[in-house]
Length: 398
Image (cartoon, rainbow, N blue to C red; front, side, top):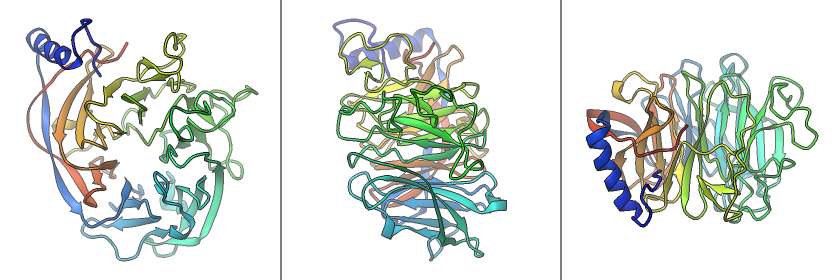
């Protein structure tokens, strides 16, 4: 997060000096004080929250064990929307990891799931809703992609449809530690990448002709971006189409990567050459100038595993508008990031909790939710007041 401005001074002292300097010379930005309101309790291992985009106002909550449940606005329905428990492995970071609804779900009833099967490998499959709109057709499974996982961690897991209508798939580097197989920088592997496929084209899917490496025999056509360690949660800004990727770090640094809506793709976010803005392997001279550096990073004095969130575009919390929310799983801290107008980002810690934050979610109206796997509670983010300063902490940017 902070570029140390003076050699020989600790990060904490540098932070304090920067805060004092910036408060006196750069002004203060008003930031909202947020709170949380519980809406669902008693859930085991909630890992993803989304909506169907069908006007129903329902939230669909993914549980790691294999079920997707429905919250109708007042209660959790007694029958799960889909139950894949018999298909899913749940060791370590494995499990049913997310669900994404087709942009035309209201018409075609298609939704997609990302899970690790009983062998521990990634499966991306399409299902259909049944005649009961709150229950899927369990027999409608159509597998569109299988990806072998060499280890039990760093499975990625996020599915999101982009504003272009294509399905984006976040894949971790395959696990272990340090990307021992160098998958993230291997253009012949789908691991450690962000993939982009057209589920409405050929069977099982088509490659969008605008994918950045189409025609390059050395790079798999599905790859949209590379150099990711474990992009556990990523999201698109529903207003601008910008993409935010929360990429879980290794020894020291957690990071948020950014891709503007007008990007043609092909970014290399650096792992395992770099962890955040710092050389990892090799230890020096790791960036030849072609890598895309994160917009935000923080070290492990503040946490140990980033959970990427959403840029707030709802209407209930006016002072949160345009703020990107993210958190740390280990410490429960929730931060807000806001562009400073000069190519950088301002960061403020918005809330310090004791939650184990596995995911954020967004409803149809742009309101944001957060899941605490420790208590099994889903909370809605709410605004309390507008008194906190935005402080530009010499963050990364152009």
